[in-house]
Image (cartoon, rainbow, N blue to C red):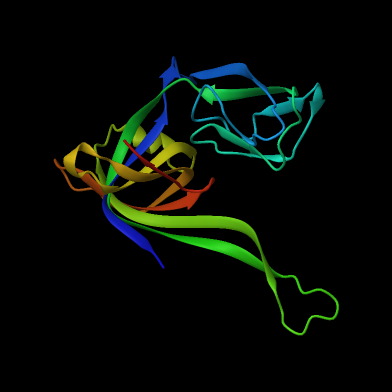
Length: 205
């Protein structure tokens, strides 16, 4: 079932002299044998830039939220374990466009996973995905055009902005554009298609 709303925004990395403002750092944590979730010091982590070691050995038994910077291990690192996470992150983001009348659909891939002797077919969830579309207005000199077809750090789908509380879904995504209407002396109207590159993250402030 689709989720829909009225207002959204597109954010892209800040740039200095045409070069994206990246930072690189290493965050350290101590394992306690029970904690599986740790929060990095920075949000908006560059996808697949991270290297995670536990007691000097690189590990892959974790999941990282590239929006919030939360890293979750499948099993808690041992007590006194030295956890090092090196990663790139965006030093800043700025709004480069806005949209309205948006909707997105989420899907979970399912693969048949019956075991020998089963009488009923069972399924295992594999990869999650989402895609969406929206309408937008933007000026002809808007930076948004620079990011069409490129991965945009943040798409914010607002679902409630009453009483100062901005409830929204955020994710990395790629924007494609089509159906552009370019009238003279007015705003450009365009419908856009969006393909998610990370899971959608619900947030509010």
